[in-house]
Image (tube, rainbow, N blue to C red; front, side, top):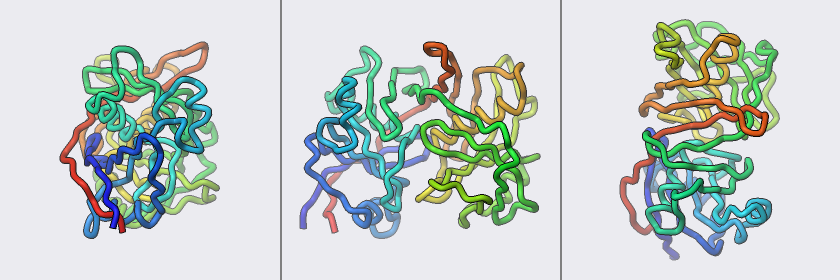
Length: 290
């Protein structure tokens, strides 16, 4: 039975099995990924990060052409491929740096299914530019039902390279009362599915020029996770959108796994959202592939 090397890492509790495969020789099936991520029968994680050169993966041609040597092949815990992972890309960047395969002396460009993202060093650990974003102005388009939620709530669609639906709740009690062992139901159901974030504003919402919210999330293909990087960015963008033009461009988002920073700034006339936070390794080893 073949074995592969791996490193277990996490970003604010959102955990990953990192698998080095520089030359793209591994072909992991959905079932193999699911077993690796199983918390009883495998290593246990919210997803896998295959570290592969952009030129060695079929979806990496555009990244390779743009000069991004490395591609983050991110798979959800059920084996499905996902466009982007904001916590995962920080863990991915740290792996590259620690392995001596890349440096943060200058911005590090990494290919993803949502395009090339740039990672830099930050006081919180690493910061990734998630790129342009979009908030759906018609927040009543999607109704969200969740176990433990007293009534259906409207959700705002936010795209930060992957799809999200953000739901505002009135207080901490309602946030803590949701049972996310059951998948929230979205009506209408988005074609590609969506991560669903439930948010409560801090009181006061803005302190010393920085906005603050709390969040829980249900991730596509995973379930509830302790953190979701792109979900954190989407939640901050939605609340900023609801708060109006006087809302700040810097936010702190508290998730069950810790705290992350979000900021917005203009790049070539387009507003980008950036996510900052830690990346931590737990252990390394080898595992037999079923």
